[in-house]
Image (tube, rainbow, N blue to C red; front, side):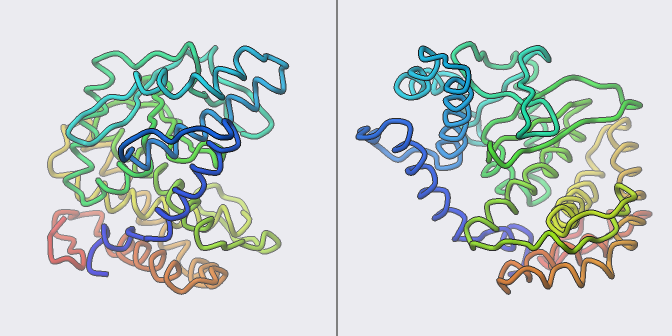
Length: 318
């Protein structure tokens, strides 16, 4: 492993995704005929789980019409939402707050693709393209392409407002996030795709993290179970690497946000170092242990005062 892209290239994830996608689609539509030609795995994986979640919600509400739609008619309808850009196929949506689902399965309201879903406006799709352009320059493009096949933009915010972004395990390869501009959107896409990547890696390697041990989270100022702690120690370091590499090309408003992010994370990562060294030992697969440690250590080395001069193992300066 000589760079971040190589660190995040774990073959087991693709195998897990294929098996999981086939299992979900067979459950929804037994005896279905697989479509001809090779489909983009990340998008197929994401859409299968949106269909499963939608079907479950419909069944819970005894809505047989919508249930049948998710089982047999959703595939061609959802395909029409796909945007094909130079970053690969993906779906970008921007639902209204009233369309979000409130469920005991998630602490945050979320959205499921369905019969009434429409694509985001052209301006929001272009904003997403710009964010992906920023990400591509940082070496994290493959991560986001694979783990943000569905991007749900939940609202525009001002730079002085708190940004909300999240991912949920029931909808892998899907990211929900507010936005204020392309470069900062790129940071939040990286953060949430990191969560999706780690969830897939744990599932693919059949790793269960014991929840009886807790660690202090400097981000939340409270004790957190090992699962949440390790997720934070993987996602935030990747945003540090992104911010340091994206900073030179960022516009003045985005530059200020990213520079402030680097300053904050410098303190947080230092505070988490000792606990991270202990918590990562709970990962029973050495390959995954090494990847988490690699990302954390290189993020910790990023200099907040002169991010251009930080050097990563591939020899490039950020």
